[in-house]
Image (cartoon, rainbow, N blue to C red):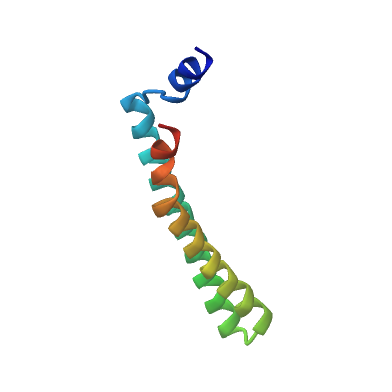
Length: 85
């Protein structure tokens, strides 16, 4: 009896609105990663024009960080509904 009730709790039917929210969250995370990468590009260009190695390195770190954030938004955020159901 206890196992049946536990299985019923774990088999939650997710509403369509929840999956839509996840889709919009994925788009937002991808956009956020793009913005971080874009600020990294501008910072790296600024460091190159000022001949500042530290600023170029910070810009490159932001580019890589933004790409990682966008990859998480494209890959991991979209599988959240599958993990919950």
